[in-house]
Length: 289
DNA sequence: CACTTGACCTGTCCGC
DNA sequence: TGCGGACAGGTCAAGT
Image (cartoon, rainbow, N blue to C red):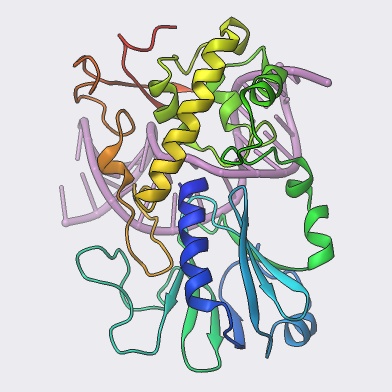
């Protein structure tokens, strides 16, 4: 569920909330994929270090430390990174928060800061992870080597998009968009939303789409991702930002999770099906295969 | 090699 | 009310 806009929203929040803070302690609870590092590495390269920057690449968050090591985090489906300050009611507003008092039973990693605040990595389904890498090793992580370009970079043009997506000419356009080696950051929500915007059926074969259709699709991808970042991402079930608050893009969604409701463009009832193994939302009139 | 499917997990919802 | 099963969907390994 956290896709590019959600991870970017968390990144921006963490940049504001934790850069400059000193980590005093790290504890890991029932998160087998997190911290395969030796305890002495955590002691030496995390404890008593300052957070120097919070970056994002694709759906991966990079929390950089003064030790020249990075806490690399993937939220996968149900991961959250929530900062709780020292003020008494710092957990979030009751109307827009999904979380209660932290830590709770989904908390996998607790990071304590020197002045008493905390960062909690929560992950109900335990698919996510947080690992420590030397800065120089981060580009060598398998995922980082394979992942495609950032779609919101101005330098990412329709020409490059078309060339990359045609490497998957024999599959469906939805499978191609979800392939992180083609381009970074699209997941199920924004695949459906941008395909609706471009009036392309998700089950269309890439080879059957014209360059013009693909150029329009890239424009819709950029539009949808930017709008979603503005709205603080989509809270479908679990996602919250670094302050424990929901995103509001889902209120602006045109097809995602709107099966049975009317298409905002033509009024036809939106359908739900399965494409590329994922729940897929389409307008049967606007999006002809 | 290109592509698809299943596994990893837990909580929620639906039908009986 | 309880219970089994389907479903949620990011990524990688395994299978076709």
